Length: 118
Image 1 (tube, rainbow, N blue to C red):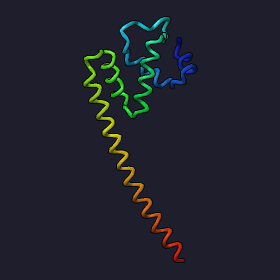
Image 2 (tube, helix red, strand yellow; image 1 turned 90 degrees about the vertical axis):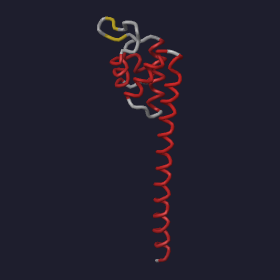
Image 3 (cartoon, rainbow, N blue to C red; image 1 turned 90 degrees about the horizontal axis):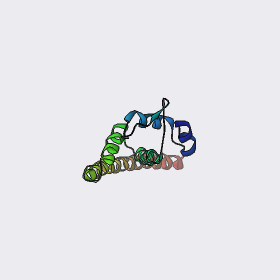
Image 4 (cartoon, rainbow, N blue to C red; image 1 turned 120 degrees about the horizontal axis):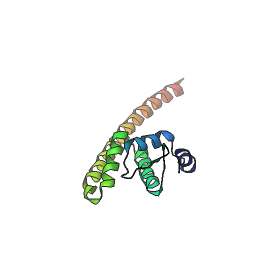
């Protein structure tokens, strides 16, 4: 499949497809006639990339994770470390946002109390 076919069929943004191509993660030469030819293994990789994007991984983190994934089972500990680090960071962000919500709710309550006095 071409980049346009993959973009339309799987709704994968072209910017992600172009980044994937630039990483050259696959061992086989995928270029034919000047254009990348996507196969089932590419679609599986792209599915993982989309999941990592949705989980908040940066391009550099995704690239590293995919290199490890393609290297095989011997990299499971490193991949788990990456996932745990990202999860911990996400939890910290959630807790920070919860504190912000509490502050906003407090301020809203004070304004509401003040309005009801008038």
